[in-house]
Length: 401
Image (cartoon, rainbow, N blue to C red; front, top):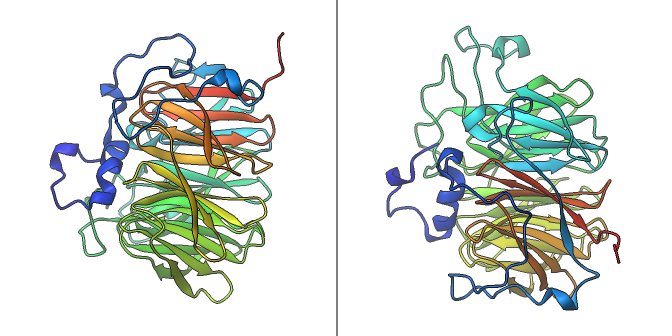
């Protein structure tokens, strides 16, 4: 990853918040207190961001701290960029470039194993590189529809044959190496497939029908469509500057891709691979989740610092809400009634109701929360922080009164 001092004024305004999110090293994060997260009660430093609501009015709709996981001799060093729950008892944290690992937990937060990202490409039928072991930099991950496999993107590759590291400020002509998606066998926690994709792959999504894996290539400005049956990229679809978040409709017919260097969401017909656009959805769309019925998209707007609710059929923006400063990643509850979003600069996590797009709650987290997942097995919310902590919250825990 690049030091932020190397970035210039040429970075699009829509990417202003992303630079820190992608580059902040875990070793520079300030020490956080070990006390459990508490409700935000003071006004934030950003004038446009409201303080959290009065939780006394929402006692039946609350997140409460369950567990905090930190680096240890057993677990190893955590520097999670993202965290994803399978909904079937497994949670994986992607430790980005800093540690070259994926850390695996059960749904109660107990450590299972740590998977190194070192591979020999020739062992996977990828020829043309010098002999030797290479490493990646896990960014995002998606489980297959049957939960038996997990696909993780690698920001860059390191080792023999790779000399041009990825960068957040780039374009398709940049002298950056192409990278790979790893497939992990969930039963054995081993990498069993390596698939070439584009430059700086970021988000990964799988289709509910199990047919495709979709990968947004940040620097190639395109979307790789991987055929699960053959493990090959069958389409590379032009997206525009800085594609990132991806959501797939429940019927597997449509994919939605957030184009962070714009105000657009690209709409991909997964039958014909025709690409159209929703325009003017908001500045710097970064992350997308879709409602269980497929009718609504919820998008974090990186440059605006808000979340938008969008009609998935027409692209109409229905409503926006501000949470903490710099909302990044997001997930949605199984019933589709709640959103959970991490606010990177505020170091908070927010819960938002989808029907009226109101922030119900905002809680402190460790420094720079960047990844979040809702575990459909337990109803818990996991937050990954760049400072090295993973925090788990119970949603609507049983009353103790």
